[in-house]
Structure formats: structure tokens, C-alpha cells
Image 1 (cartoon, rainbow over the protein chains, first blue to last red):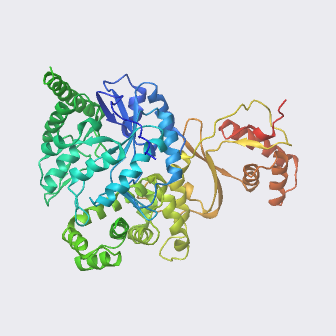
Image 2 (tube, each protein chain N blue to C red):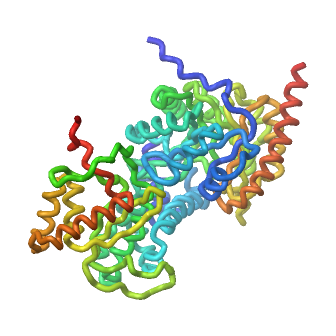
Image 3 (spheres, chains in turn yellow, orange):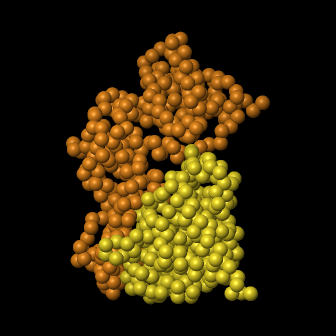
Length: 291
Length: 268
């Protein structure tokens, strides 16, 4: 019996520039004037299975901006099946927020019932490709919306890599039919930490799968290792890589993430303005190349 | 193979820091092929990056919910944090629930550890409750216009909890540097979320506590007042009844009492 096709993600129902919603500026956004933002991305774990102030604020925000959910703890790559209760709650939160799709990370973050609360790298093996691809294929039905996977930052490869990252990521997407949330900063960080060409990596992906792009800041350790901290402004090379990516994908929603050392909202909005300039130029270039 | 990597990452991030030789032994224990173990060992420094990230995230979540208890515990916190990670580890998807898991693990040990102040368990629980109650799921509020009757139960807000301390930790200053010792006395505290989403605290007398406990367990109002008075060794005098009426009026004012129990209401 043929496998049912998962719900298609593309074309993305979102567009333009969005901002990762953080509690540091939630009240300012809810109480303030309409901001030049096209959407907010929310971590559903911060709002689901709870009541109180934050879900109430989110409900108000939802009346003014489109929301899209981006999860942190699905742990799709762990050997154990995802927690059924978590999935039920997640689905309810996705329905509440009317998120057009849901994304999480191609990684594992739990181990034998223990929650590690960090995105840990999967061995790039054929077995993991098959196993995670099959599980991701089921997610759109489980969650009721199309599902997308994000490429993570990894500081080491666990054990021997049977496949290069590009082949592993592409294989999981092919096997699952999932969309790709392409984190441009992660590609950049990985390219420096592991020594590959970021542009060649992006150009080799099936970019028709891209449903959203992420950018964020990173920091460099004394050892030279780049860490994906989301704690600094987006670096210039990542902005350049974003422009390059958009010139290949055409219009896709772009999200600015900031989780640490969060500055004033006005400063984040200045970064958003920069991103919008890059977005407009790259999309013009994309269309010009197709005339 | 994934099982083996999960085991290695979990022990490495949640357990003690390992030397390269110990890492090799850990890989063997989890059945990783020697070539994979060798590849991991070559990345030992980067494995420790993950150790720092995992522990940093968890520690930060706990710091947010019980800063005063952590400050008072000092290095003892690290000792118990390490034990919690090593012997139990978080099970929750939600970082806000890590502290309650830590406290459930530590409370029995703290009670028997002379190095831990006798009030510390109460203080940590009290601090943790702020985030717990702020996040309690709310039930949709039904129509509550009807007056209370003695025969019916009472509908209470779902966003509350009743706790009992052996020390008056709720009277301690908020200052993390403060080291004053709370009075040793039995305290029953109603911790609730107001309709404005603020977490508030109300110390209850034994009779008031008994009433609220019984109402929470579904007893009728009359039965709750009678039972609470009897349990406290008080007779059901007019003063007790007036006190109960004042308590209910106060709780209604605070948004805790909603009205007659929904399931007990006359459908007509």
C-alpha cells in the first residue's frame, strides 16, 4: 500500500520579515503601535499546557500579527517515539495560534526519557536518515499542519559520518516530504567549524523545500570555535549569505532570532530594517534573473 | 547505534566531567564501535561544549525560579544539582518544570542533611511556586452569578494551590543577599493567580485552611465548615460561621471563589 503523502508545506503562506517572540518585549509589542513586522515566530513550549499572563498576551498579539510555531523539544531524532501527550498539547497549541506550519530541529534532545534541553547532533547515517525520515513523514498528520525541519548547528559529528551533512539533510527531507527551515547562520557557523563552502552547500539543497529562513548572531570562542548563541547582532557574512540564499529561493519568510543579551526592541527593529533591505534587493535579483 | 550515542551524550552532559580515557570507557559501556568511539574521543573538547550548554540551560532555568534558595545553599546547590542530573535528570519538555523536578528529588535528602538549613526546603518550594502558579492551566470560567448555599460545593479558581510550611519563609525579604532565618511555625498558605495574572499569597488560619482543603476536595460548603471546625477542635459558634462567611467573601473578592460548584447547580 503506498504511503500517504504528507501535507505539502510549499508555497509558504508567510512572507516578509518576522521576529522571534521573546518575553522580554512581549508586553511592549502587545501594548504598542503596529510594528513593521510581517509575523512573529513563537516557541510553543513557552505557551502550551499552561494558563496565565503569557498565553493571554499571545492571544492579544495573534489578533494583530500572523504567528508561526517553532518547537524546541520534539526530539525527532531520539530513538524513543516522541511523547504522545506532548504531541497532543502541541497540536492544540498550533490550532490555537493558527500557525500555517510547524517546525522543529533535525536533532535529538532527549535520551531514554531524560530531557537534555539542548539540540544534539545525530549521526549522519543511512539508518538515521531512514528512521527520522519516516518519523518526520508522520508529523504533518500528527500535528494537523505541514511540518518542517531546521538544519542545526553541530560542534562535532558523533562518531563516523556515513554521509556528508548535505546528503543526510537532503535525504531526510526527501524521505519525509517535510519542508526545510533553512537557518542561514547555522550553515555559516557549520561551514567555518567544519570547513566547507557555505554557498555551495546552500546552492546544492533542493531550495523548493524552503519554507522559512532563520538568521541570528553567533560568537567565537577562544579556541576559534563559533557558537550559535543567538546573543549578538547578525554578522555581516551571514547577512551576505542570506542575500545569496534569497536570490536563489525567491521570496521566503525571514526570521530574526535573538535569545541572549536581548537588546531594546528598537534595536531589533533596526536589524529587521536591514534584513528587509537585503530581502528586497535579493528578491528583485531573483525575479530579474527569471525575466 | 543511536541508543549508544544517546547514552554517551546523556552521561557526558549530566554526569561528571570525563578525561579522554574515561570517555573511551563510556563509549565501550554504551556499545559504540571502536571507530566511532575513537572519532568521539578526538572531539572530546567539543563534547564538553555540549556539557556546558546542557548544564547551563538547566541551571539558568533553576536560577530563575529559586534564586534566594540557590544563594543560601551556595556550593551545596552544585552538589545537589550534580546529583539530580546524574541520578534522576529532567524528564519534562518544559524548562519551567525542571525546578519542581529538582525539588522532588532533593527534598527527602535535604531533610536528612545537617548542612542544609531546616527551612531551606520550604523556601525553595515557596520560590518555585511563583512560576508554577503563574503557569497553572486555567479552566474556562463558567456563569457564577448564583449565591453560595451550604448544601452545595464551591467552584474555585483552578489556578491555586494550598501549601503547608514548617517555617514562615513567606515572610523573608526578597533580597538574595539576605540571610535572616525564618520563624519556625506551621504555616498554611494559599498561593493563587489573580484575575490580573498576578501570583498572590494568603496565609490561612487552621479553620480557614480546613475549609479550603475540603472545598477543593469537593465537599459541600456546610460540610467543609463543619469538618474544618471539628478538625480544629472548635465548636460551630456564630463566630466561626461569621469567620467562614468573611473568608468566602474575601476569596470571592480575590477571584478565588467563583460561585456554587458547577456540577451542583440546579439545572433549572
